[in-house]
Length: 105
Image (spheres, rainbow, N blue to C red):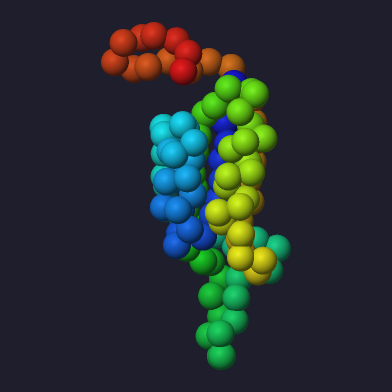
């Protein structure tokens, strides 16, 4: 299993989540956050914003679904500008449902 952690613009998160759900990947967690990337914030006029709002989308999927999920996220979060976000893929060793104790997705 893999965990996809996508740090995206908040205004794109609902579109991305809806597209993932339509493709059969309905379980996800959204976390509101603030951060900055390589551009180290943004300057608008004389005001400097060091940290910008972001939303983190967490989704755990089977290994064979990784490329499909990455494609959906990239296609629906892309603007071509700095700050579109980052996607991190990491291995998941175990998943346990708290209520039932059942392991696995």
